[in-house]
Image (cartoon, rainbow, N blue to C red; front, top):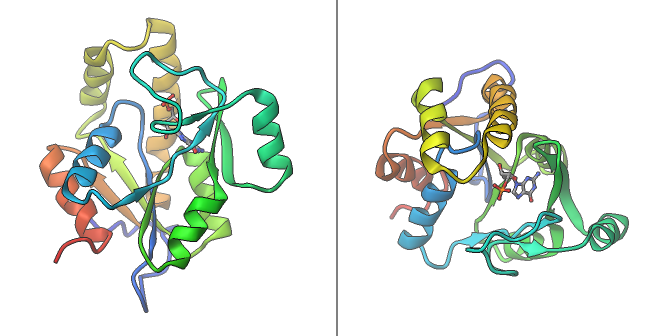
Length: 199
Ligand code: 5GP
């Protein structure tokens, strides 16, 4: 749906926004939606973030993230090579390498970032023409159920993520569009259309 919240950005006059920034609380299904979008559009550019957190057993360096040391992350910031960065869930740092995103946009093709609320606010300041999209759960209860059902975090980490989720949900009105992830197929349809990837 179009978000008519007071803080929403200007309506998209002129050419469609080429950079789309996707934000949503933990376990809302952002990753699944992005995976489905990539399945439909294998050439879609999705930024690979740098992070100081350790890889999970299912993750590969340079594919899911660029896994870097604290020192390397500091260096990326010092060299102004981060479009945005933030400490997420109060623990690890994550950031968007600037070069690949700018190169993609310069070539006139769309790009997608999946980042946290702090980072999205930084991108909005740096690139006001970016399209800000929030993925919302059908309800708070459903979000808690999805996080527990996923079973990838212990109870303390789940609590931390839910605390962040409350803050993020409260900020949904800042976004240009809110997509409710009721079903992956429908939510992906909506994102696809916002990014101008249909027809
Ligand atoms: P996870 O540790 O589960 O892979 O990711 C945790 C959170 O970090 C996600 O909610 C995701 O949105 C956020 N995140 C991932 N990459 C970036 C990034 O480049 N910048 C910012 N600000 N947040 C990110």
